[in-house]
Length: 72
Length: 384
Image (cartoon, rainbow over all chains, first blue to last red; front, side, top):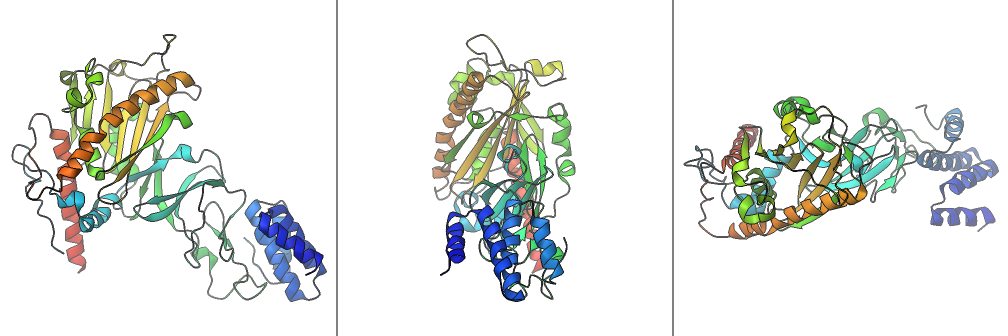
């Protein structure tokens, strides 16, 4: 398990939504395939939606640009 | 199913009998009444003060159904079935603030506080959040028709009742002077009583003043039986009023502020009405209360009591005194409603007879029950 995985697990365990948004974005940035990037961005977007994160629309727009989401 | 015979209930009061035992003790009749009486019209669920701020969400169970009371982002109170449209998972399992969206804890489908489905993660495969056939516009939370009046959240679960203001037009007109902002007194102005009786017995007892001198001698010391009058609107609502309401005073002699612009009759009048089926209401010049009856099966009811005032800044000590006073009164009623419930296990009890002079409001409730049961049975038969 790498350090990012460990931090994601800790954030899940703590239900730390800001951390879940940030860490999934970090994972998306580090992803080496588009599929993996889409996966992590999806998680970042969902947790952003849940907490009303100011970057929710930015994350959604990124998914829309990848053809993985639709506008509200 | 063999139906109970309600023909005797619908007779004029001098000849009528009360509802048969089965309406108090039989699970099958309870289920029949659930559809006929409790979900077909406007029932009380909660108070708007349960969700004071946008995003406040409270899960509730009403007649076994998981519901979600929420104040949406725009400030409107809404009621939803508390389940995800995906796998029927419970969405919110404890009162909390929804900061952004309601996320299902199972597969993370997300809903806005207005009930709109806004995200379906991985629904088209990993990282693909749309899928053919998954039309989010058709998969929002299932909303229950709701309406706020006198601080109470009323719901129509069947979705077939006329609008609240039409269904309760006569009651709204009678108490139009109280149709103004009411301020819940807060944590010191709410309490619950769990009573081992069918919900209807709480209604029946509330409707009449006949029992006051025997069960509430403290009330009777200043508000005598002859000071009361019946409130009788066949097929709509019933209750009783008093002409000698006396304001509560604090140790400093102060009273609660009055509701604005009341007719002078309210200087000494107070009225107590059951909004059929399950909300017991009381209005006075300086406060109002609502008792929402939540049935938990045929033989148990939880009474959710809430007190409201004309202003948000009433004296806490006086509020506490008022709550305590009403709690004493409502607790005095427990032994009679529980005693009548135990009495309903007597084989051959014929529903009892009514005092033609004193039981009119209670008989009207029985008549309303019988009428709605007949309508329900007719619909059920037509659908067969």
